Length: 129
Image 1 (cartoon, rainbow, N blue to C red):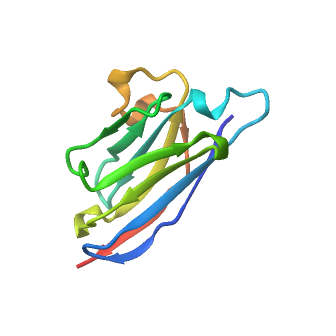
Image 2 (cartoon, helix red, strand yellow):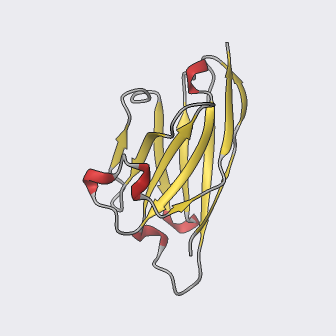
């Protein structure tokens, strides 16, 4: 069982930046963190959860069109941590951001939240206008 804990959310003005983090922990018998595809999703009030970004086992990255060029996902396997650097934030980026992990996901499913087995509790990001 993988546990994911997000941190770093908060209130920021439009145009500002924020970096959120997600630390993974698992029993020693579990696969190494580097074996997991890591994703970030977000859910605004009253809306469905949407894909934000994903990073593969070889650190290949994937972004939604809404954040491409503004957000950067990265991972530090030594720290079992994935980051989401968010720049040029907009009020429409306001949401709860969730970290997700999966060991067996395939490339074509990276954007599907139903494909991930493990989820964090979420961290709130609020962008004021």
